[in-house]
Length: 195
Image 1 (cartoon, helix red, strand yellow):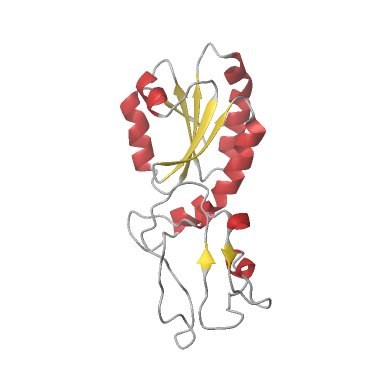
Image 2: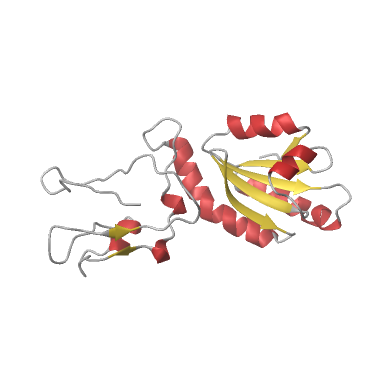
């Protein structure tokens, strides 16, 4: 895929709006920036490697308003977006860190772009769950929370009918709805959300 160069501030917003659920990777750089020039070919390679993501390049001198609104204060700065929401920011010419973040978000973005979460205009927040910080206060040893998070099984209470889950996200999110998959006769009867 080709890296698309953004020529003005309005074009940046148009690209974010047009690419919805796709992962959008933006390189904020400047023509006078040495590190920007060094990582440019590597950034181009990433665009070919991850062809279902959108790669943009913004010259901070041409698009000063965009750079300021996105909090760009050093070059290069790489910002990743999904559904017009900033999901990651990497400052400096660390292309390995950029690729690592792309890998983390790419699979979820590809899945989301092919199949949405079921609610128009919303996105699946699974990729934003901080798995190491989640806990179930009374999950059984045979069916723990980790099985649910890794999508390799189900979770079950160890002693009673109540199951208390605590989920932590990598950033602030607005939860529109929660989808619970369970057999009709064994699924939860009452769900209470506390925030």
